[in-house]
Length: 115
Image 1 (cartoon, rainbow, N blue to C red):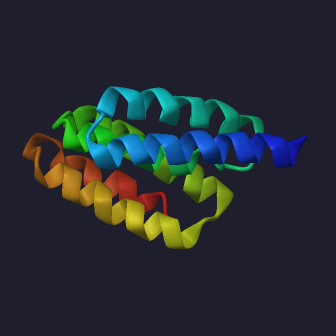
Image 2 (image 1 turned 90 degrees about the vertical axis):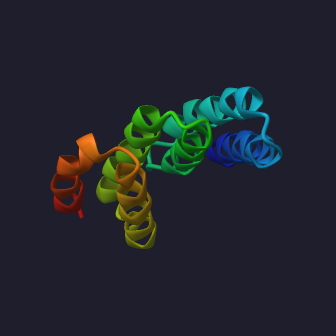
């Protein structure tokens, strides 16, 4: 059962990423949120992958609040699931997003503490 669940989650994540790459952001979000649903069923933190892609969609839409929201969610899950290589990349992305919204720069220390 778990193998089927992860296969479906990966398929939705790949579809979402494909639509992100071609600029169809509504379709991308549709499939990425489906990937999150299936990823949560695995109870191992896998949903962090579509969360990272969701953050990228919102970044491309210049919706930085939601981009930050989903990057933070991914960082928190990664810290609990111990995906250290991914954590460092997310901190970099999070910092990059905050640079576009200087009002949120004060949030960086909270992000770094998670790691």
